[in-house]
Image 1 (cartoon, helix red, strand yellow):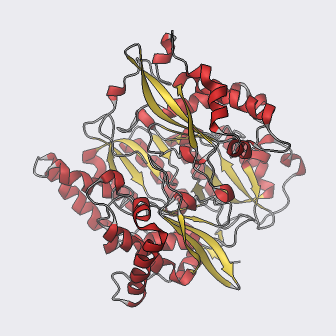
Image 2 (tube, rainbow, N blue to C red; image 1 turned 90 degrees about the vertical axis):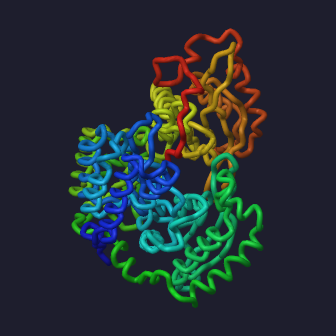
Image 3 (cartoon, one colour; image 1 turned 30 degrees about the vertical axis):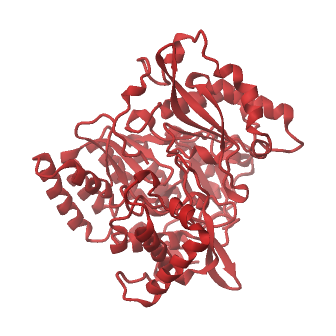
Amino acid sequence: MTTSTLTSRPQTDPSFHEDIAVFEDAMHKFLKGELPDERWRPFRLVHGIYGQRQGGTWQMVRIKLPAGIATAGQLERTADLAQEFGRGSIHLTTRQDFQIHYVPLDRVPDFMRRLGEAGMTTREACGNAVRNVAAEALAGVSPAEAFDVTPYANAVAEFLLRHPVTQGLPRKFKIAFSGSDDDAGQAAINDIGCIARIRGRERGFEVRVGGGLGTQPHPAQLLHEFLPATQLCASAEAIVRVFDRTGERKDRKRARMKYVLMRLGIDGFREEYERELKEALGGERLKPFPDLNEYVQRFGGRPDGVRPPSEAPATHADTDWFRANVLAQKQPGYYAVTAWVKVGDIDSVRLRGFADLARRYAGGEARITNEQNFVLRYVAGQDLPALQKDLDALGLAAPNANSVFDVTNCPGTTTCGLGITNSKGLGEAIIAYLERNRAQFASVPGLRIKISGCPNSCGQHHIVPIGLYGCTKSVNGRDMPHALLLWGGAVGPFARIGQIAIKLPAKRVPEAVSRLVELWREERKEAEDFSAFSRRVDKSRVKEALSDLAATENADESLFYDHGEDKPFSAAAAGVGECSR
C-alpha cells in the first residue's frame, strides 16, 4: 500500500515570506493613517484577517487547511498560537478551517511567521478569493467512495493559491469534493462541486457549478457528467476565469457566482466556460498545472507510523460511543473515530492533548469535518478502548457524532459583526436540552440541526431537516431575539434547500425541537427517518404545530434576553460585518 508523506510534507510555498513582509508594510501604513480603510480592508481580508464585532484592533485569524488536514505538529502549533496571541480558544469551521479570535492587529505578522514555519497559511482564507478547498473528512477510508479525493482537492488548492486569475475576484469563491453520491463534502452548495466518478478504469469527476447558500440559496448545476481527472485543474481555472470576467462587481449582494448562473443559465455559462477551458488547456500558462501523480503519492494511502491492525474487542462495539463515533474503514482492521467538539470550540490545552492522540493512534494526522469535529483515521481496532478513554479525559468522547446532538453553528454575536443573535449560545442551549432529555432524542434517526446568527448561512442552516437563523422582532417597543426555523433541507441524493416555516422567540426554540420530534413520532410512515419526514411533510404543518410558541403577547421578561447573554437584547448592537466564515 502507498504510504502518505503527509506528516513530513513541504512547508507552505516559500512566497509566504513575501506575503508577510507586504502585509506588515501595509499594516504599519494603515496604523499610521497613511493607508485608507477602503484599501486596507480588502487587502487584510485576502490575507485571512478579519475585523471582529468588538472593534478596535481585535482580529480573527483564519487558517486554511485544504481538505481539513492537519498534522500533529500543526495542531500543536495552532494551540500555541491561540494561547500566545489570542485567548486560548480555537474554532473549527464548516469549511474545515481553524479560526483564532482576539489577536491584536500589530501581532498578526508574527502570528503569520509562526504559522508558516509549521507549513500553514492564512493567505486567501478570506476576501474575494478562492477560499479553503474542502473535502469530506472520510475521503480515502469511506467504504462508499469511488476513490480518494484528497490528492485532487489538495492539488486544486495549491494550484489556485496565489494564482494570477484568483487575486481580484468579484466575491468569495468556494470549492468542495465528495467521494460518492452521499455528497458528504457538500458539492451541491459550492461554486465548484466535484463528485468522484470512475468510467472504465479512468478516474474523473462529476462537476457542478454555481451552488451557494446565503440570503438567496441556489443548488449547484451540472456542468460535466464526467470530467477526466487530468483536466481537473484546467477546468477549475476556466470556471474561475468565467466568474472573474462575468461576475457582478458593483452590487456586492449579487456578486457570487450563483448569480452568474441565474443570469446566463447553465447553457450560456457552458458556452463561456468552454472558451475559457480551451484557452486554459492550449494557451500560454499563467501558472503550471500540478503533477497529479505527485499529489497521489503525497496524500494517498495511510500515514506513516500507523499500527498494524487486529480485530476490535467485540465487547467494545456494543457501546453508544462506538455506534455513534466509530466507522469501520474500507481498509480491514482500521477505524475512523470522530472526536466530538461541542459547538466547534476547543481550547489550547485540549488541542495539545488531542495532537498527542493523533500522533499515538493515527500516524500523526487528523482532519476537521464540515460538522466542526475532528476525525482520527487509521486507528487500529485493538486501540479503540484506549483511545476512547484518552478522548474522554479531554472531553471529546461524547457519543454525539452525526446525530441530533451534533449541532452545528457559527460564532454569531460572540465575535461576528454581521451576527444578529447569539447562535453559539442557542446551539449550547439546544444541546443542553437534548442531553437532559437524551432518551427522547437518541432514537431519532436523520435529525440534524444547524444554526446561523444571521441569514448568511455560515452555519449552513439551509441543508438540514431543522435549520435556524437569527433575526429580531419588536415586541411592545423592545427588541426580542428570534430565530427563523427552516424545514426539510438536505444534501446528498435528496438535496433540497430548507423552507422557512415559522419565526420563534430564541428562548423557545428547544421546546420547538421537542415538539417536532413528537410530530415525527405521531405522523411518520413506517421506517421513515426524520430527514425523509421533513421532506415529505409541508412546512404549513410545522407552522401549525408551533404557532402558540410564536406568540409574544404578554411575553415573559426572559424572552428579551438572548441565549448566553446577561443584558437585554438589542438589534442595534450589530457591528460592521465582514462575514464570520
